[in-house]
Image: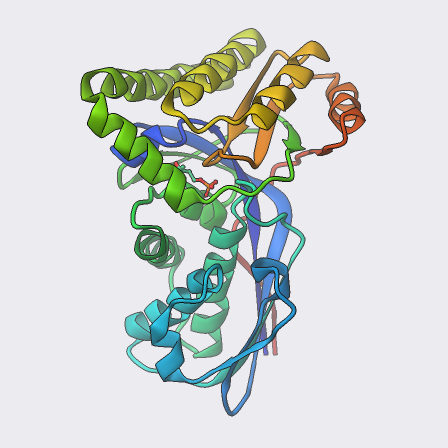
Length: 318
Ligand code: PMV
């Protein structure tokens, strides 16, 4: 029996623009998906926490290839690609448990994919290198979503902070806690990425400049993070949020949370992840609890993120 776990993540700067090759910064946060794999005569999948259904799924190899089961597609594609990479197959019981809220931009699907690849390759006694896990998880997201960058899968695999630009992944040091606010509304990453693509196709000159500006914000933010320039870190978040709004991925609820966080004294706040619902992050050094309370007062859940230095890891192997 093997248990692997992987953290959640927040994107600090650069979501959506990263799909077009611009840089993006993300950090891993300390809430985790756990994937347990044990011996079984069939392929059995229990993933209530990540697919929001109370039906356990028993599959044979043929059904795995169908990959048409909504959110379960991420896990099924991860199994398929791990089999392909290792070059053999095996039956097993896979049990995923998670305390990451699903579909709100905190990386629940990517964490399930990364922990599944790690657990399964270890279970099959062919453990993949960290770099291989990161790349395979990216291929899974690409296949399921149609378009994806490496930002989610790399930060969840490596942990800590990352700067991603195309296929280049740089590990960076981020220590700052963020306040997370959750609208409780789920967004569909694939659809939101498609929405931006369509807006870009209709207005290429304008949108290309917005995407390039988001890339510049990310690079300036990297300097600000390195220099602990708090004012700049916050201000760049605010600007990034405005540009995401112009891409069409910010909702009324996200805007409301951002404004609540700013009014409570945050130095900056923005939506995080694909948008269309989901979460915001707010930078509020020293007054994090006040911002959490302000967000909770309007009926939304909120917590202070603590950074997970560790990415994917094996929890138990016996
Ligand atoms: O997985 P989410 O919903 O947090 O969004 C990922 C960020 C995007 O830039 C919108 C997509 C991607 O693959 O980079």
